[in-house]
Image (cartoon, rainbow, N blue to C red; front, side, top):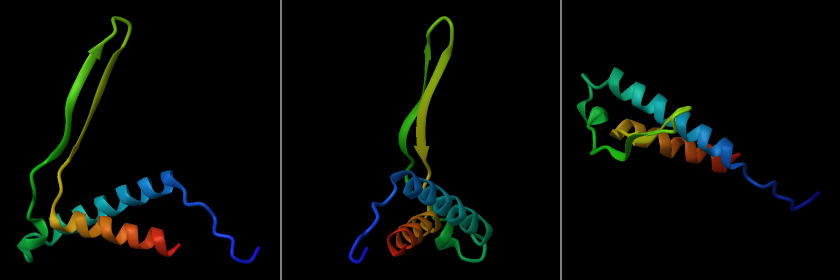
Length: 85
């Protein structure tokens, strides 16, 4: 149909952001010696791991993001790719 735009998938965006952040972080650690600005880190953000003991099972929740300049560039490239699709 002409003019129809398919709805964007949130799971695809989250996976693309995770891959972009990992690749950016990998590039930052690889080239961090040559270009120290890429490996410059920021304060970690997120929730510290917390364990809930339910007597039958233990459940651990937590998420900590350790950002550096290259991982942010990876996130931005992932967003660019997502919105260009």
